[in-house]
Image 1 (cartoon, helix red, strand yellow):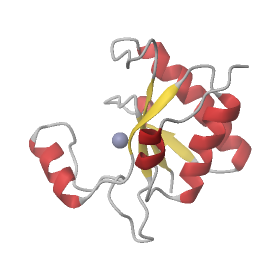
Image 2 (cartoon, helix red, strand yellow; image 1 turned 135 degrees about the vertical axis):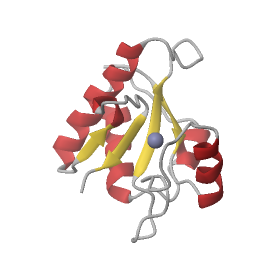
Image 3 (tube, protein in one colour; image 1 turned 90 degrees about the vertical axis):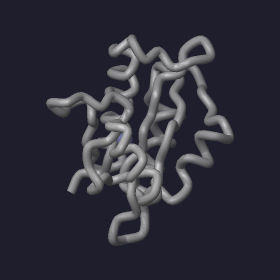
Length: 130
Ligand SMILES: [Zn+2]
């Protein structure tokens, strides 16, 4: 089993994310994943969300990336990291990350939803389920 380590950027991007989701991401990287991945984004502020909606990159101001009632963000965007980059056109790489995330979540007893299972697929996106 290969051992992967988070970059400083990945750690920084987990700041402000709900501890349950952070635990799943960390367990996933260290124990479950078969592919390296990076944390693209976690907690988002309202201003950034507005910009993303204007750009058509997000369709809702109700994003789980925004601080929720408990003060934490409830979503993270993860991307596979292959040969020094993100293989955006390689869907199965995103699936590998998702499989490992689901294993880690089940192991820790945390319910998560993968954006890749949505009708409009969002491969990097994971969020706590209600
Ligand atoms: Zn997302």
